[in-house]
Length: 415
Image (tube, rainbow, N blue to C red; front, side, top):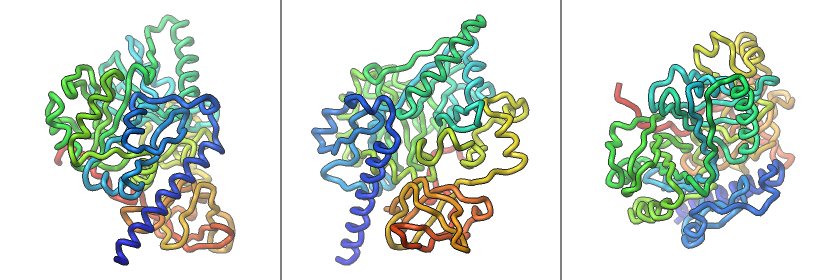
């Protein structure tokens, strides 16, 4: 009984922390879209039917959790089975034409030219002025003349403006490149995440999922519906897929998948705690236009050829940081017991000096400790370095931790 009470208490803390974090994000960082009445994804009615507790996130009504499951239990179910997330609020974009690769490379840090057909990669739109991260996104190279992008809903207007301005410049110079922004009324996006994903999804698709590896994509039939794009990726650290589906079919497909007992709906709360355990950044919290890829520990997203050519946005400043170092570094933090750290929590060093701040934090359902990520002075960035966190005017002992906090379980070819 004591163990059950402890798990229930931990789950409740995770739930309360996630709710506060999302509420704070909406109040502190309002986007233009958020001033309007929130939009509904095609799955809105299904969420309500299943007891979804709907909140306004990035201008959309989305479930933070469901009545029959706490955030903590949804989190643990994802780690052991399979959860289904509605991520239709995210922006899906098609860039195509003879000069599509040159076009996208003029905006981001990736070596798209060097990617293989149907290979996907995490990339960054960077600012030419500051080297900061305008947005992070997944790009799939469908072919040399066709690229598929999935980027953050909260940055939709920023990315649309960025792409549209560059498109005007390219077309004015006679370049052949075209862009389609897929509205959620046309194209929806769901994510299946967890170790049982492939076993559950296999009977519903006309491809062999054993041959679709992490960060690769393909077009397939899902539940008999053609032209669904499946990408083996996700935001949880688990094996999983994201599926782009024509909106008119998405509800029927989701209902079919939910017939499997191992599949449960999960919301924003679990998605946030899962991604934090996986050490993955949330734009607006852990990365923004004032944070460079080097400071954020994302130098690996910059293609080797791009570093050599030094022609990506913000390359002068970013390459200087690679050579000469930075003033802050993103780190993981572990704290045993007490309240969890929240975004903005002050990080204190050995002599009571302020050495950084927390950008994300929560109780870890998988580990039973409080985890966080944040930015610190580089001299405090080494793993196991002891720190203190100032929470409610009280100092709590903590230490720097390597990330991910929970080992990733991506499906990759056997070596």
